[in-house]
Length: 273
Image (cartoon, rainbow, N blue to C red):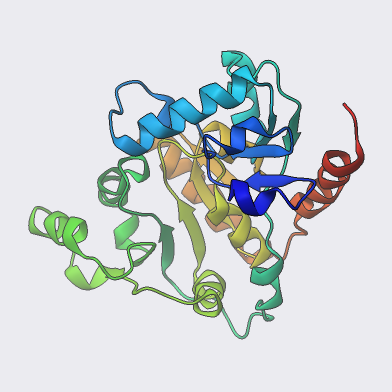
């Protein structure tokens, strides 16, 4: 990357870290998605490498790009990149929106849970909420993001009285199929303890879905009239009830991220501050 980058005026490293040689060039910028790896308790090689390269990048005052305002606030608060010019490059959805089609027919009777295998996704906690809130009595559940891997769900089924057919783990899917999954769900549920952004909420908005999501900073940034947040069991029940009342009114929402991205790219390339 540093060798290829020598031919360009700007070189962007897109995933939290940068090569050691890349740090030496003033042309280099790093995209910071989150600060999960900055936690000193994470002793993996990848985390150590990210911390080391970010430290060098910081000392040399190279450009830093944040993917969300909440991540930017954390960065400013920690002063880890205090010498850097900072920019805000929100996630873009151009290819996703190219494949988006107009919804056909009524939405289904199930809820789509967007999850994953990482500890921050807290899939066990989401399944526990599904059970304790009695949502399973009214809505079946489809889980997106596990690529067909059933281990956590199978373990939950063993200790739960919920009928097995109420929970479906979706396979690995193309963008077109993900869009269909968003458009066919009664509403979309995004549960997580920690995120750098929260792409699933944005994608749900662009597919005209109402959303229930945990009340964490990146998700609060994306809240609109059809996004309902919660922090505990009672909050989840209330959010689900409010969502049920208005879900049929939800429609496509413009990606304001694209407007911000265009403005910041212009500032990044031509600006001096």
